[in-house]
Image 1: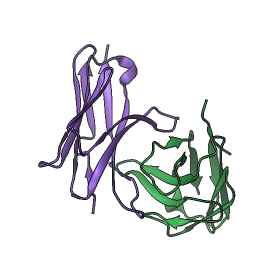
Image 2: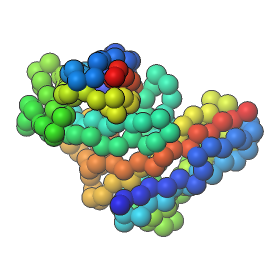
Image 3: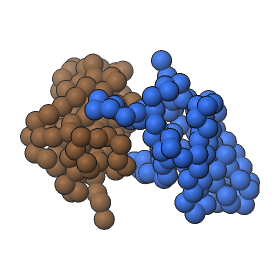
Image 4: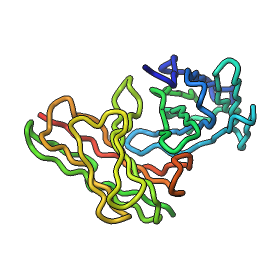
Length: 113
Length: 115
């Protein structure tokens, strides 16, 4: 059963416009969420995170929004740049000694020049 | 600069062979992880370790084993490789023993092909 869902496999946006990457989760125990970015032939790198006590976290061009009631989070990239073209993974974890990070399937973002 | 290195970028093995994938981190991290990445399936956790000689099963441990004899090194072992283990294998590490909530640092990956 997939607990972290990234239902859109790909997204294409024009340079300078906003990119919105969506992520849904089913496990109500998740209380911490992370986004990772992955370029081809490289390992994923951490991008931004958000705790369930917040509904927004911002870091430069990247903002993550969390809607706990809808079990939904989104990553906004403004303005989008060609260098943002990559696969973006949403991940979630719950409190507890045995909790592990659960990743979604990823979304491939293409930013057109 | 933090670094996680994996012994091979590309590896081709035959069915039935024993395969060792090595991972080394230089950040003195407590936790180390092995994932596999497959198209349409994302990142799936195979095993992780939160201390030397300690290991925990992830979501898909079948067909794999691990070894952590030193803090900086975490090995993934395929006892008898099969074609369905053809995949990208990613190693990661994170700090803070007792929690897996910290940012994970990933290696570049090993593309394993089993023929």
